[in-house]
Image 1 (cartoon, one colour):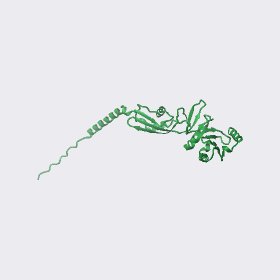
Image 2: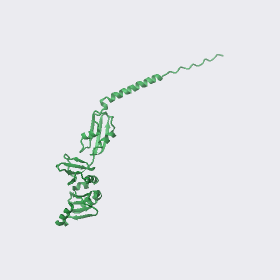
Image 3: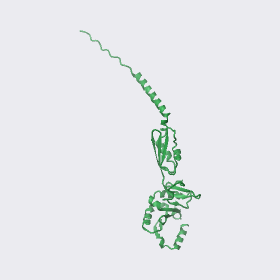
Image 4: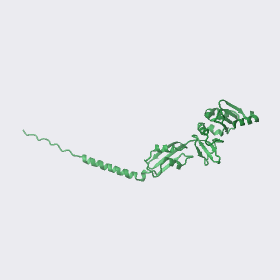
Length: 256
């Protein structure tokens, strides 16, 4: 009976060393590519596009964004740029889109213009719905469909509140207002006199203006031009039934 020879196991090949070497080479290769990429022009901002501005300039937007052509494309996130641009008083909303390679698109939406004001120096200023005043000398839509504020102090807090309330008024009703003058009283420190393009005179208060605008519109659409008072109670008196004496006495009262 022949003895069986033991089966010899084939020694296992040790590949751990070669795998580590391959991993090191791969990491070095990736690192080299990263260094080359971040030092190449393709990783830099090559163009900044700004759209939607009317009063803020592209230069102001760029300065607020704190990014410039040549900066690293991936250094600053879109959300960070949006937060920076939103600090400008004219800006209501902003959207930043990055398009690789190198293009940064900044789309802004400014607060709407609700009124204009002529300064003592004769310069036209646009008033935005958040109370911000901006230069409007070059605005092509000047005075077409917005009221003019007359007789207001530059630091009057009621004026700032008025612009916010005007921003809540529908465009159609806002476009009918031609002039707004402050006529404060003891009972209503925020009382105002408004002239409309449809030839009405309206006495109301800033604090109640948004609540009264629909009723005002109803009177304007159905009645002849006259004087409307909208405070605690609402009254309407047509001009053709008033005599000159009453008109003079009421005008004196509004200036007191």
